[in-house]
Length: 480
Image (cartoon, rainbow, N blue to C red):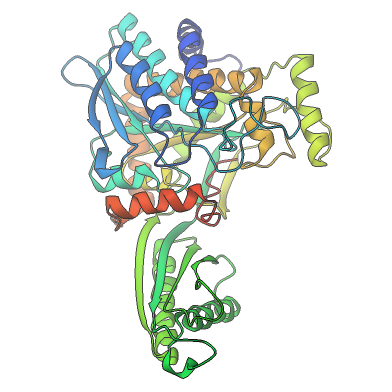
């Protein structure tokens, strides 16, 4: 049941967000209008940096943790006090460019990338919340530090992993995040841990017709490995996931391929389980090489931990969700129903109620927000920027995010984030309880970042994704 009245902090946050509404919507629309995939979204990054600097934040780091599209901005009042983090994202997805219309239609700017996961809204809500909370702190002389982490490339090479490895979250009292969703939702959910691996084989080329016996096919090794992966599926836990693509598989059928490469992802509900899958895959890669007299190279490029939920913060967020109105115009509902009709979903329009709290549910998806959650308590929730029946990573999410539907999502999320942020700054017991819960849930486990990529490899990943080769690498990391 909702509280009989909303907390004063949410009322104040809503007022503060209204005072910076122009900034929030400017960020969202500018980022929507210049979409770019992860590692290439520098224009979007600069939009956030510009507005934060205008608001008085200091950019204390660029290319943070060695990530090309990450940054850290900071603002403090007083010389002590709590430290809170906000986690804006701003990368787009390949092939999801669309006009702000309820049908598949090319974007007017001609860009084929698009915000099919709503990161223009997500980023605007997070950065806007930090600026709104700054105003609340100034007005009430609250001591503390706000830190905004520019979380580039969430969809392919998530910056939060690089930031976590570099220790940027170690001194936070809490971090705040949200994600576009079909309904307002929060709770204690767990996302899967995962590893991204690159497996390559080196063979020996030869004429496939005249003397194939002189060659050793790297493609044979890749196919043997892939067959082994598919046989593995019978013997792994139901919670595990394996998915892969062929990146290099030869250049001509009459030439024995001397190089082959597979990009594979393994997921499961805990890091130890993913580690076990990874070990098995490494052995399989070597076995495929032995069977084809080729040489295997196996590299774990990147990994995400499982998310550590925080019921203390989820309860507070849920309370604010119940007191945040879902007010849609007739035109917005018509737009939503048109999107639903176009994809064959029930034409029910936009959500009008808060979803029940999620209780200890495991989601199949992964997110680099999880790497933050091992280092500090994280408050996270979903808020509508598209209608039920529409899936993330689709043209319809892009379309809705360029309209007032997405705008309302950014503004509502910013108010909720600012309210929870203000309470964390001013209620020591809330911080203490949230951190105590994190300690209990970790139960002595220590965070270990999985990040083994250099800048050259990052640039290669960006190029491959731009060509549409990284579909399995594009994560479905959501809270909705």
